Image (cartoon, rainbow, N blue to C red; front, side, top):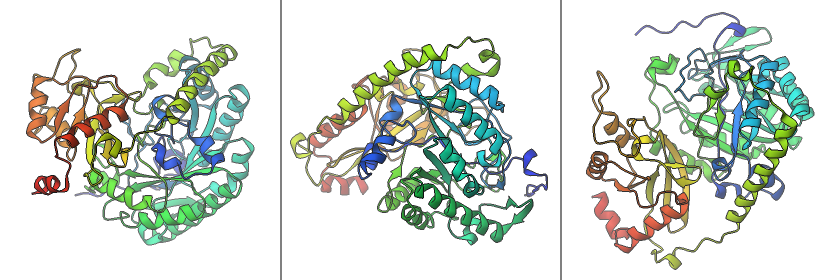
Length: 502
């Protein structure tokens, strides 16, 4: 196989490394945090698994240049259906970005967070990045500002980050060992020259760790993103988690490598394996002993708009925004009303005392069960065939916890009923329905608003029980209700688990 050519084009005109963003964490992961930190993040859609059902975020792509090359990154690729860090449809000037933010925030009052995350690295484009932040601070003071970076230039811009009241920063840290780093980063662009291999990785790691410490010393909240690359840094990320926690990072988001060959990345072309959902969950659980873990990252595009799990970017292209009339002062009044209503709802939800397992009739030694949910806005809301992703929850005697999301392909274009005819892509070895069911492997139940006859039968044949009885119910309540029903049948006892494994 022919290897891709590494160009010596300056980074201003080349697709370099990307910094990932747009992620979140389950409510229990925030419980250990000091009150002043928890207060800052519990209503942040990119950090709180609860809040992301209610509050929206957006990214503006004002940073085209990058100063590192990542083997998992290709920023030149774009597809309207592609959700991947660094991908954009149009790069904006700061002025265009500001107009877009004001228009989106007026149209989507739930939007609370503006992030700059690419398509290159924001701190490799400091003039464009900070011009955007400065103007937005003045014109839209009710919007929280975030920045994501690979960390190479971070130490020299910490003061400016603090100056612009950017109190949330994400750093993508994939390693703390230069030997591991050399397998991820072919080169960095440092002090006007390209530095390759182990030496380049060493400089990047030193700058990342220095910048992380400087941010936390100033009281700026830091989330660390890491890409899980099987056979490269899978075991090493446990050490990364310990070190970034020691330096004050408050959350760690371990994301799966995306290495589809059609994306044109080095890893994709070289057929680097992607992690399985089980591998990702095992590593997240292993790191959770040292660090609060994020689990509902959507690995968003660098121009994503809307709630996590959706992208309304097509509604806000610059040709549409240019003809919109926005009265942002009036919009802020409406936005405050909407925000207050959401926060009141979240506060009420957090005040509910959940019953213990024994109160629900669940044996203390019952095994855990994974369930896939076709959910939206915190409720079981979608038809099985309409879901583009399933939220994975684990039910156990300890309660219900969010695990991850798994992307599926829309195979049904109907309204109330579909899935009664199976579609096979040209040249594909399995149908879209079969592929989606395979993606749900490991789950014992799928909760959705409706299920067609054919997917119902195929799900049962795959050992996944379809359930359409809890439409529009809150997800956690529905999951626990089904778990209680399974417990009542005796299928959760240790002996039943042994039989299932056999």
